[in-house]
Image 1: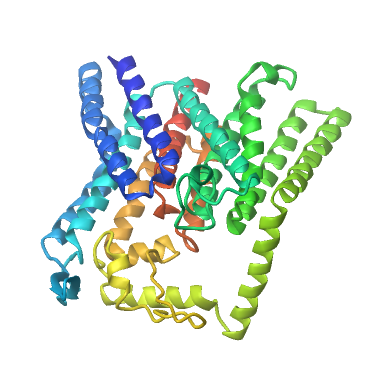
Image 2: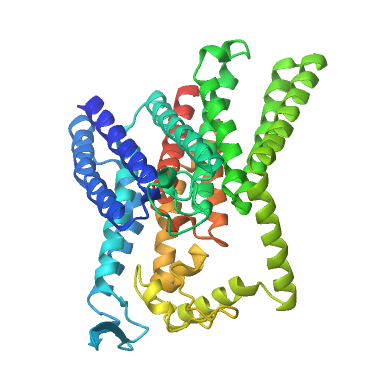
Length: 463
């Protein structure tokens, strides 16, 4: 029964991430519905995993205690549904939403229907990935999952690179028009592809260093390490090609960390023999330089365009003595958040409520309306939508499991790299909105809920 539940959980999670990644990053309306429906199976799988544990150990899994913040968050959103913040009306055939001015001391939702939908998708994803805690008992199963993620990301990177090289005007080689000109592979927004890639890179690097720690360089060719290395290489090349400046910097940082790790491992092996140590270090450094040169060669037009855009943005920021449009957006979002600081305006409510606070409603040059669907800061948007209370509960959804597995942190390169990737995305979320992409959300929780139990299994085996 345990073996069957392990396979069921792995299959369910793998299909979830593959579906989201190829369905426009999970950001099309129909894709979110499909992902929500598939993720809903995470709840019965969770109950079956609990039942399996009860039948074998005669007690509930202790890790279930880490779900209390998740329960609290669901309770908060459920209460907010009872107090709609806007009432719906119509004027000359157009639907209007008018602020009801609900007390800021009460949890409220501007659009209860949108909040319920957002909660449904989030719950399904979280519980589906949480099942990895309960069902997976072996390191090999976790590595198979990470290998599947790496291969899928590799195919996406090749697909996106070819699409870029032929100058496709839309997604899937122009078959589907993109609402964003800066798209890559099946992802509508290049920064979302970059965030997804950062997580896939850390998964690949973790698996690679797992095998490097256990095998000689000659033996590596007989392991999956070389396939993972190819995935890391092509994923690294795809990020600057996509035009994402911020995640290109993060990717370069990851490669530098990997280079330092490589030198550290080879030094430990070579001992007093300095010749192979220096040779391998130089080879690794040259490989990094080669990646940078190849990235520039492949993405030169995109990189030049982004550099020109960066200069213009910096010049505009200097003139306005601030962060330009982005700074105004943050300021307006904070005004929105501060009006309902405790409980926010409701999960998924940002696009509808922000129009009341948007001071950039018209462009200075074209005088066209400016509409913001996201705050370009996930942390700030979270406070605006679910308040300080909801944001704290969301943070605890990660911190509680982290605390539960605290004794086994740092025991495995796989765990270390996965947690590094999660940490980088959380930092990135201060200045961008990676969690505005469904595929990134799924990849984040898969990496997180793989890193913690893998470290514990590793620690138990080496004890």
